[in-house]
Length: 218
Image (spheres, rainbow, N blue to C red):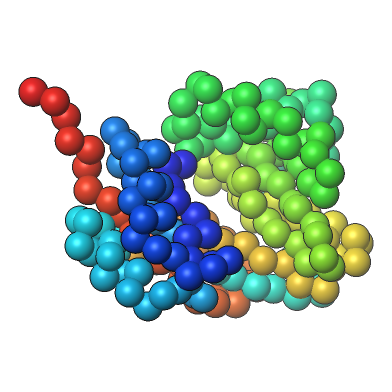
C-alpha cells in the first residue's frame, strides 16, 4: 500500500527513463504506479504493461457539500486531539491497516501539522478509532481514518465522518473530498458504504497499476 510511484506524467510528460528510474528505486518490493487523470503521454499504460504491470485496486474519489452534516448516534466518545496524543492516533491507524511498527513514527506527528485536525473515538475511555481532516484552498480532505479490528461495528467511522464534515464547514469549506478503494466483490467495502450513507457522491476512480512480485534470489 505504501510502496508506489506518484505524479508520474503530471507535471510534465513522463519518459520511459523516469519510469525505469522509479522502478529501480523500489527494486526488491512490490509496488504500484498511481496514474490519475491528466497523466501523459498516452503511451504510459503501454510502458507499464510491457514491464509486467497490471491494473490493480483503484481509489474511488468522493465529494460532498459541507451543508447538513449527518447526525450520528453512537455510544463512543469523540475527542479532538493535539500532538500530545499523536502516539495514540498512530497506534490506532497502524493497527487498523496492519502497518509496520516503523510507520508509527511517520503518522504520530500528524495532529501537530498545519492544516490538519485529528480526532479519536473512545470506547470505555480507550482509543477505538481515529480520523483526520486536512483543509487548504477552501476545500477539505477526509483521510487517515481507521478503526481497531476489535472495535468495528459500533459506528465509529460514521461518527468521525460527521464530525469532520461539520468542522470543515466551520473552517469555511464548501466541499469536502474523500477516497477509498473502489467497490469490488473480492475487496472490503465498509468504507465505501459509510461514505455513501454520509451523503457523498461518487466521482472517478484513480487507477493503481500493480507491479509484478519482486524476484527473489535462489
